[in-house]
Image 1 (tube, one colour):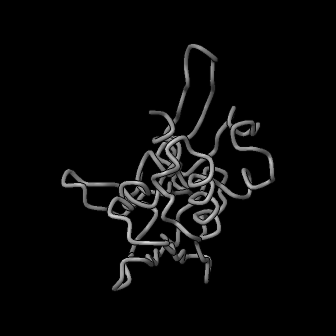
Image 2 (tube, helix red, strand yellow):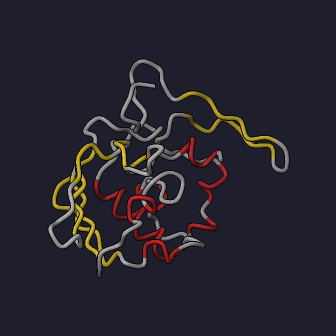
Length: 166
């Protein structure tokens, strides 16, 4: 799945299905399990060098909720608040037992809002032909119907969105 290599998500799931840090560093449900504050990695970057912020998280979760083929996986999301650049607060209409699975790779990639948030429909966006994400690999080239070439996203001066150094 090239998308899972190009785009990071908030969480990864371990073998037991438990959430592990990816772009999110800390999180904790409210007592009623209807609010999930998520604290982002402060040094996570998109491939173009732009910092990943809570605005990107809000944009991505709502875009997935509203446009993904499996959008029912996030129908419990009412809104996503962004009280500061590194905190996204996911507000649910009701508790969602599979929320972490829905927010993990590859279902809810964190998209760069500064690229995809220009009003162009996501399915038609020209950036889809040369995607820039925050995963461990970056897009290099595409030969339609044949090959997608990716390269490792690490050059010593930048870090991918993942919790470990690539």
